[in-house]
Length: 124
Image: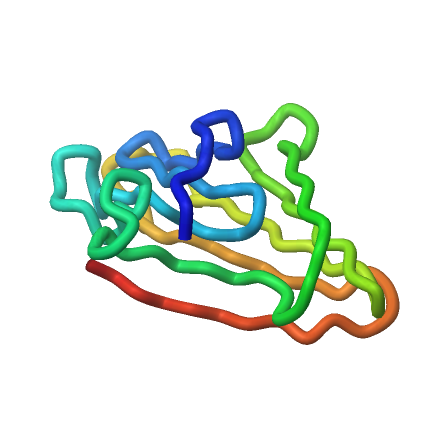
């Protein structure tokens, strides 16, 4: 897989860590559960051995992504010949910062038609 331009990424975070999510549904950078923790996914730096967590349509698709208004919630849209699916990514932020859940939430929803999805979980 070729390296992506940095402009093809969005960032989600919980004020303790952050993940870089590509527009085609791959988390390619995440130190977890804190910024100073070892990386779990690092394909951004090492495509062959860095690790990633990818959710995307199984066939050909046109990707797009944007943040939901006034939020750090990233929504990717995948348009295929058979339908449209949305992948929503975020890391919940707790009001009490000392009790943060340290979670990455990834929600997939089919908006129209039928879309077969694939999931690849390859931590480093």
